[in-house]
Image (cartoon, rainbow, N blue to C red):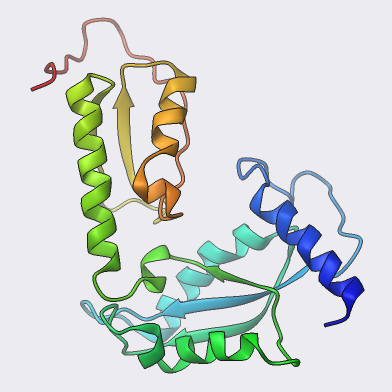
Length: 208
């Protein structure tokens, strides 16, 4: 990669990682002055329950494409089939090929996008992160800042992971959620807003 391209990629990566994700680049009328970033998409067909390659790949790409929209395009795919999350990347054929290409002068991508975060974890990494996430929420409940929280099920969008109801203002809620281990690891992305209900309609038990 030539020096000019390296500088451009560095600038584009900075734009992408610091963007306001609530703002849709496709709706803003922005036009890229260059081809943008070349993304590699990584996906994995789960071995849990019955899944087929076509539908598994399709929904993971559907989740990944909005993340790169307006910043570049997916140029190459690395998709593993029949590989358990317990397997390390080195033992997954396509996952192993992705970092192997990083050192190649013919590398076809500048950045990597994953449509569903669990597909990129291996071994006990996800379990350990979930334990830290739940312990953090328990501390927030004990402090009285968090009233209730829990995961969604059958949600129409897999990026909607769960709901937390706070007894603090928007700014404080955003601050404490930013320190959640799962948020810091990039597994979750909090969206903070106000929920209005009639007074006395819902009651929450105090800290235990």
